[in-house]
Amino acid sequence: MHYLSELVIALNNFMPLAVFVFLAGIIEEIVAPIPSPVVMTFAGAASLSLGKPIYWVLIYGLLGGLGKSLGAWFLYVLADKFEDLFTNKFGKFFGLKPHHFESYGKKLANTSKTFWWLLFARCLPIAPSGVISVLSGVLRVQPKVYLASTVLGCIFRDTVYVFIGYTSNEFLQSVVDHSMSVDKLLTFCVALSILIYFIYLAKKRR
Image (spheres, rainbow, N blue to C red):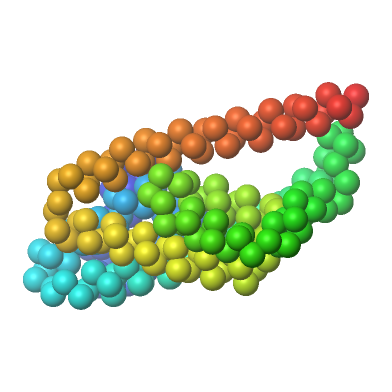
């Protein structure tokens, strides 16, 4: 993970910082092991060392958030397509019917709170962004709800990260470092829950 982060940061040597922030936002969302705080706090620290005024924190937060949203949309579409392929190939073994998971998504679509829950999750440093993107694609959350909450949430979170890097605030940096550990724990718990669910389906099918 550390090597991947260093590799992405090294891209900054070959392009303007603004372009780097946008591209890094895409990469760190798609390549889950790369933690978002590392890339965006680096962008904040780099902008400070270049003598850029503080309003660049907002610009880089916007660029990083848009890049991350693009990566999140890619994961959403990929997860949606994979869910269809998985159900068609292995549905009988697990007792899954076509659009099995989408029925849960339809229940989510019937509540106006879905947007706010997704937005809240996107803004939280401890929430695993890649997991949110994949689950949203599998459940086929309404695209407009997903995109709106993703763009706003990613811009907010990346702006906070860039600000932390720009100000070099040790307390906020320590909070972010601890949040990455919680992020990994939540990702593991979600993966384990999914595994247990499929084991349950397989046993129920038999």
